[in-house]
Image 1 (cartoon, rainbow, N blue to C red):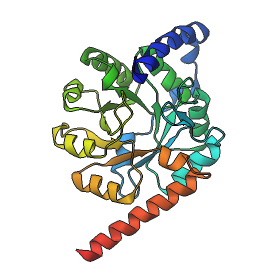
Image 2 (cartoon, one colour):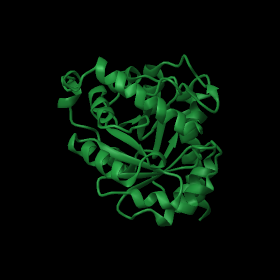
Image 3 (cartoon, rainbow, N blue to C red):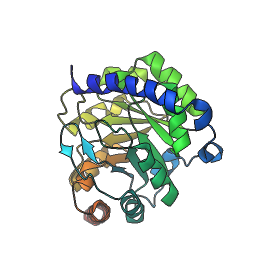
Length: 270
């Protein structure tokens, strides 16, 4: 069984347990059910932002611990002060060391779009996402069929949440539905965890025109960002490159400055 299959198997057991502990009626009493979401699509289009979705990530199945004791408050505020367009917060505990409370804490300190990064396979998780303060959810095409994507994305939109659908291959793009707002190309193969930025470049022309396009995973240098921007991508999800440092927020700030300097140089050169 590959790692993605292990994660999904565990996730379904976890959902059953959480449904018993935290009934839907309880989740719906959250103050965030009455709070309008902040649009991830709109923030990615803002010219005063970098397009970077900066991720808070404690560990991963492939790398183990990355930054297990990082402060959500300090890192998330620092990311936004650095010029990030949005936050992504991993809430899976078993494999990524995250927790729902991390996202709620980030929500408490930041007015910006927050993506709940998890493995959504059930409508309950979407209600949960809304209850903890998320603005957008992730649907991974690799582990969902088109019927699942259609049902889950429609339900998310009924709660006001935006939907990011993640793909890794051209056939998975056939699962894009009318309720998908953003398509993200994961440069990491979730079955082998190998990474190749070229995956995004190769798939760009096949992505529907009416969705926002982002590139995810394995982005660690400015040249990659420039190349992806030139291809037409509007957003870039980056986590590990920042989180592996002692102060992720400072790494993010320097990275965004380097992008700005490189773009200024290219304009001068032209």
